Image (cartoon, rainbow over the protein chains, first blue to last red):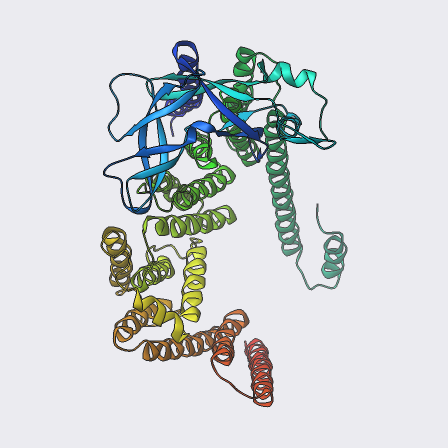
Length: 194
Length: 429
């Protein structure tokens, strides 16, 4: 490799290695800045990722429902579809309808689902399912958001929802709101769970 | 440093007239060079280990997730490990282009920096998901490192990542229609690097490891394009395994360390043969003969053609059963497959005969070449074939005991015979 080629190759490599993460950032920033806000009711549980740290796994109410998806009827088959977003009476997001073709208007997200031999769909997976937290906060969040027994009374956990920005089918979680407060604020007020 | 025992012995040997001063000097230079080389190797190992630990440390620190820092600051921080790594690679290219330790260490640090950067972006934007997506992005960012500083260790990590990604992408969505094509592309991106290394450092230990990872990566990724599993899929796997064992005949340089291909191919073939020496395995797979054949026509044809084509290409350079019997094992497996269409039991018997035959050929090769390892492998194949039949049959404990003793005695006798033969050969030469 000649000297000039070597430096050119190094330059291209460095550029590529900065551009790809940069492009990821810009894509997500654009959704956060310009995307429409949807609130998804959720209950978090706490797992860890070997590389990316601690997060709460989010299980959304909007993932269950009764939809039909004509055409996708194979048994035990995993499929992809576009879920059209709408809001219920309380202002929380739900998926109104599933469709195979990419919608041209309205807010939508890509979802995955399984078919079991007919066109009924009862459960879908949303394209966002985790919220990263500082080390140690995952366990606290999970514990505090489980139903707890206080003497003989079952105390229901605080309601939680994710604030999600949606733009052209892309979705980015902006915040996790617990009992009406952003999770970062809420975590400062609750005792840490070991 | 020269071995103290050698530095003591040399003057003695000189005094006794067993060595001339020139010979003594040459021995001294030879061992000094050897110890310097060993020192360099040690330095290299420590450079790699040190960089790996530092890189993993950066990933762990980032995994803590610093909530107190603002989003823009964290976004900026994500690039610090990358820029640090790139700076080191630049320094290596400019000032230490020949130093292997610097090249491997700086490339490894940059690779870890890239993984940390993607992890941090995932945290900041709560990017959903499966580990496979993360591995794919990291592997993609690591591709250039194979060529610009050109690092063996990064290449090994890269191949492992590509294989891990492909397996996860396929296994997590087994019922999906998506195939892990990116894994194949990632593997293809490493092929020019492999060929380049073969030309430049084909006899080095680094190339040996690279061969091993290439063989494992290709073997695993090739299995990810099937939608189901039938006996024909196994034939395709044996075909690929046989092709692996023919790799040494595909190049002219005997010093090229392509042995890992043979190792992986032979191990795969032997495992399959042992499994298919049971009648039940044939019976079960032949009952579901047509599973996935229509959907998998392309990958099946590719795997089968590869085996046949490489056998045909190497046939002119290789005598029948030369060095090892695995390529011929493929042909036998095809025959067994055809036989199984009529009688699975007969196919199982044929497989047992094939294993016995392969065992005998391997023992013979071992004896001819004076290789204890190879002879014992042949004996192990023979013994295991016999022992495995114990699972099928209802023999008395006494008879089983006698067979174990016979096999043990056979091992001892053959090893003793070969050791004596070696000693005889040594004394006659």
